[in-house]
Length: 79
Image (cartoon, rainbow, N blue to C red; front, side):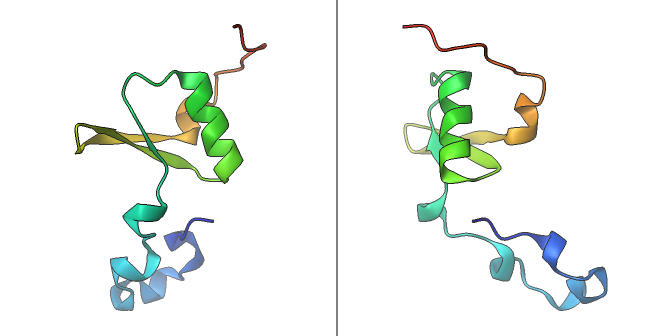
């Protein structure tokens, strides 16, 4: 379960610290750049998260959101 600013009324944003709405990094879904799209999407669905952090050699490279997969409709996994 992710925290979100969507749950905070806009009138309270100036009183809300980012840390109050941020999940700890240790709880984040992390993936590697070489992970395939289907695996990452399945992991996101399994963990019920909307984004994954992409790490390589201990460095954060970026973030991918579930909305990035909106047009990705896998038919089936091939072995």
